[in-house]
Image 1 (tube, rainbow, N blue to C red):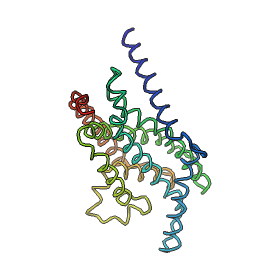
Image 2 (cartoon, helix red, strand yellow):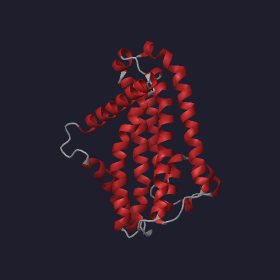
Image 3 (tube, rainbow, N blue to C red):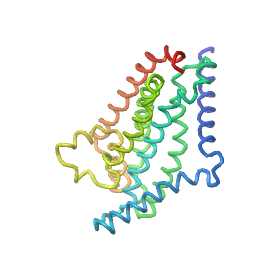
Image 4 (tube, rainbow, N blue to C red):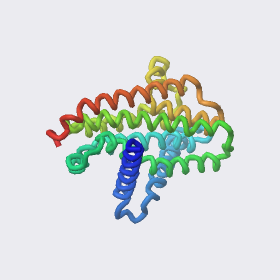
Length: 257
């Protein structure tokens, strides 16, 4: 009974932290959650115009292809960036409340899942608008998104712990995300990637998400076994390493916060 009570307490704390982060993000914004839709729509429109009208490279369902890249990338970059700084930003809370410290970066990732679900809704809507019907392969979506969230949680545990000791980590994460935008096939296809670089893309969870989403939503097919396998392997490896690193470093948090 005691374990159940503790579990309930942690779930209550996690849900409240998620709600707090979500409310703070949209506080004093006149458009509120509409920004979650406006940002990918504007980026989609600009990239579609540049690629199809300037570079003259028309592709079928190109706006949906763009969103298949933007939605996972937006979630990854923002959740990882906010999560990296979550322990430092919540230093007062960390010092005063006796809770597992891991719950703070994980809550920051989960709070961004609420933002992500809004963009997923936009992606599915645009998929239907461009004539791609619902099919049984859509049942793969919860699995691949779940694996992707696991990866982001693991990576965030590592960088949030390191950021306590070296505050430059948050800026390294921001710089890495800026570079990653070009290394993930958001506005281009996997087929143009040179053969020697393809193994890097295969084991990049963000790229794997893009491949899987395009396969399901644009092509109406089943994601390849290698994509799911690589995504699962990297995601759970990141989570395990994340918990190990975080628990080794959290003992000294108090001295550096």
